[in-house]
Image (cartoon, rainbow, N blue to C red; front, side, top):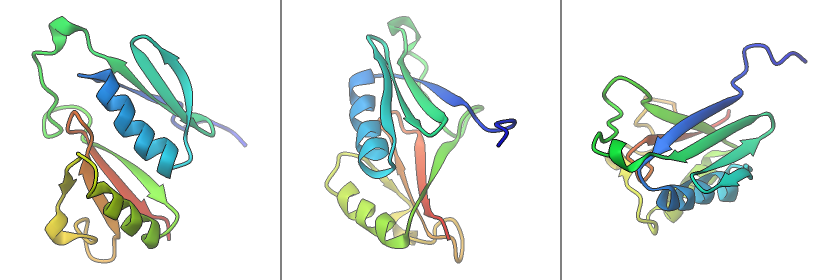
Length: 134
């Protein structure tokens, strides 16, 4: 199998590495089969197969510019889950977490008719989407 064209990794700078690590560990490790790949004083990465996500602490002097997914740049990260039930279970767990669900009034079809998905935000307000692979 060739790896040509596959994403190797995505690196995202964050405002608070501790808070980010808690969120992404909860989602990626606990629910999406990722493992912690690398850790250092200013960052952490999570890996699944050959793809990994990296989160790095933004330098203090650069924190004045807040992230906004509707500006130029990354809008959201989307992940597959195995079933609609897994998404429903994650949504129930999300309700007990300090993270914000998006489009709750349109769940589970906020992405359109027949597209089963859950949307929420990470601590820096990066939108996260999980959808069922069907």
